[in-house]
Image (cartoon, rainbow, N blue to C red):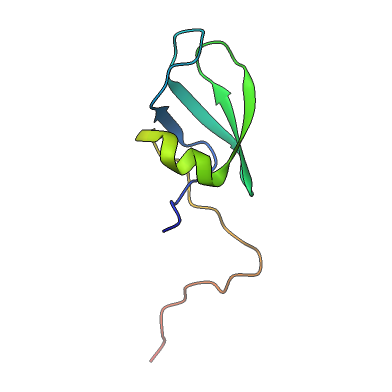
Length: 78
C-alpha cells in the first residue's frame, strides 16, 4: 500500500535526529522523499519505501498535489 505523502507535510519519525528533533517537513516528492529537519534545518533524501516504515505520525498535512494532466472534478450539469 502506498502512503499518501504530500509536499509540506510535517511528519514525526520513529528515531530522533542527532539534534534531538523527530519532526521533519517534506520538501521533495518522487522515488526519494526530501525531508528537512525542523530542529536544525538539515536536509536529507530517503527512499519512499524506507520512509513509509519510519513514519510514526503526521503532525500536519500539506495541500493535495494538483497534476496538470489530471481531469478536473466538474459537477454534472442538467
